[in-house]
Image 1: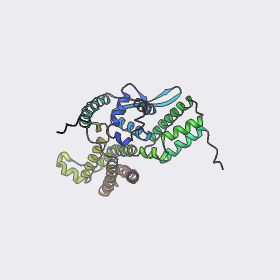
Image 2 (image 1 turned 60 degrees about the vertical axis):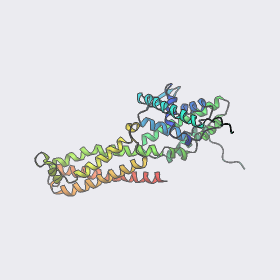
Image 3 (image 1 turned 120 degrees about the horizontal axis):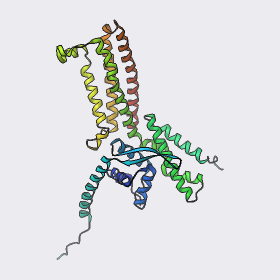
Length: 114
Length: 221
């Protein structure tokens, strides 16, 4: 089931940076990569992804250029050095956070009553 | 009863982008970039569908449905566009500082090296106001630019309010300096240039102020 965009609040930047880690991509390819990489769970609307990319570029975490691919002009985004560093930090925080939440949410065997 | 005939795919896409353009406000170059990106995205989405066997019209209709209503897309860009516009105006106002201030320095020739800051403020009473405007502009540019990855980011509403305040400060500065320096300025040719530069900046600042107030209304919707 697709997740609502508001559920991803706080994690969208990390997701977009992670998609760009493998190389430069244009906006729609990023949306498709998120959808395909999560079996459709992250089917983010255009109105969420494109403005987020512009904000990441403003923060200097990604950069973009016009490219011509098979006669079509498209804006390709790529990670900057600061973006790679930010992604590493996001991963560290996420690993610690998810481990802590998993530890609390994982059902524990109930103690036998006497 | 049947509806109007469906538009050819290219015409329908142009109409869709025109509807976004009509609802998209902000710096023109940024608008053009967004529209070009969206066109490419819609075309890519439609291309994927035609490759799976859909007709161009069916593929485009599905792609447009995926991208969403033009107004929703334009609204999604509103915070980024507000910040881009506020930054553009602040950068412009900062750049005009030396261009206008130079002429007034030449006419009012303050001598701070003799009388200290007090002499500077006596000769140009708007100096404290200018210092506040510059500080406010720089703080906003910093908290909406590259440093946001380290420091808290200013909200679009804050950036727009700061830009409108700076524009209002500049208008107050220029009106005051014309009033204070009029007798000195009217006596020499440089004065005509100084007054002309200030009047031009007042007009531009009022236009910028109007633009920022409009953004405040848009962001409050």
